[in-house]
Image 1 (cartoon, rainbow, N blue to C red):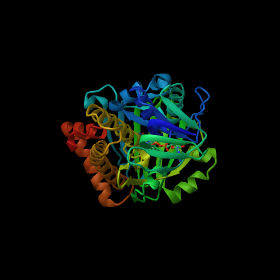
Image 2 (image 1 turned 60 degrees about the vertical axis):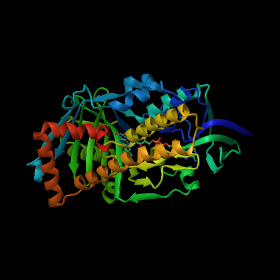
Image 3 (image 1 turned 90 degrees about the horizontal axis):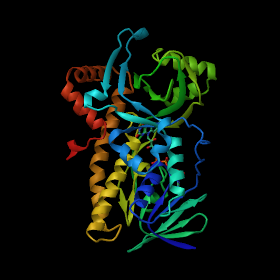
Image 4 (image 1 turned 60 degrees about the horizontal axis):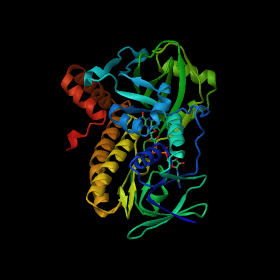
Length: 400
Ligand SMILES: Cc1cc2nc3c(=O)[nH]c(=O)nc-3n(C[C@H](O)[C@H](O)[C@H](O)COP(=O)(O)OP(=O)(O)OC[C@H]3O[C@@H](n4cnc5c(N)ncnc54)[C@H](O)[C@@H]3O)c2cc1C
């Protein structure tokens, strides 16, 4: 069977689903495939990963129609507290606060559980007449053509589309089929994630301890719960992951310095070896790469999914311009515009995240000095602090 659509998206993760819904909103016919089904809310299991989505990208998720369904499961992040512990028993610790008021806002971001967000997007997409959903199968290969590409799925179905979008994550099939290489960095770090309940309120403050293995970050969720993102050297993380529940809770208690009172695990502790890369090209023949098929960064700085939402924002902008100029969807001009726009911002953020990871995740005296000096300068220079915070929150004016 061969089906025709205007745009075909490989991968129904958060990025693929959001794009599909926003395209459908413009009456564009979309094909969407993913081998992994999402369980409907409220049966969706609470995974251990959450993403802090910056204010400026929330309207995209609102427009998709999914955010409304899960807003009670998310929490506003109003302040980031950075703690740089030093010395035995944290005798010389340095603390800095970065509040929403510093950038004249009521919050910095919204912390959203990824499994709930995907379930809400999935549910919304299933009922959309413009989205042709291919479930329980995956993209196998692609035949590139002048006016369209033909995608073959593992179940034998074929889809013809004017433009294909790769949103199928770090091991993207489309990226490999288009022979697009990646530039990667190896950190030998592992991200450990879990959900915790605690006796003290978090007061919508995300607390980030800078330890030599990487940051240990508690991010607010509704009530007395928080998600934890903890980066650690891989060798050490293997040891910690072998601990039983009591021992890991004791370790988390010690690492959190009691800032949220008594901690209890309400989930498993999951782990993911850190990957970091950028695709050498964000486009191919009638092909656009976005989200983690194009870029995957360390979670430090919480940029990943926000950058994917920026990809979607720019994609929609170049598409509208393309349609206005009467060009075919996926024209060379459209692809060139997307690549130019996204490359500058992505390179800048990847370099910033890499630099931050290098400065934070070690115990070298020079790094320590730079870290503490920078925090002190930001603390005492409100205008610089506002500028740095705005860039971290997705402002790209500095690149223009
Ligand atoms: C510990 C941690 C904390 C993070 N915190 C933040 C944060 O605070 N803020 C932030 O912005 N970002 C954060 N991120 C990044 C964010 O979680 C990711 O960028 C985001 O979840 C990736 O979404 P995605 O849709 O690109 O990829 P994925 O979720 O990987 O989606 C890819 C989809 O493609 C499907 N697929 C794979 N192969 C095929 C195929 N052949 N055919 C069809 N479909 C296929 C998969 O099944 C999957 O559903 C964090 C990441 C980590 C690891």
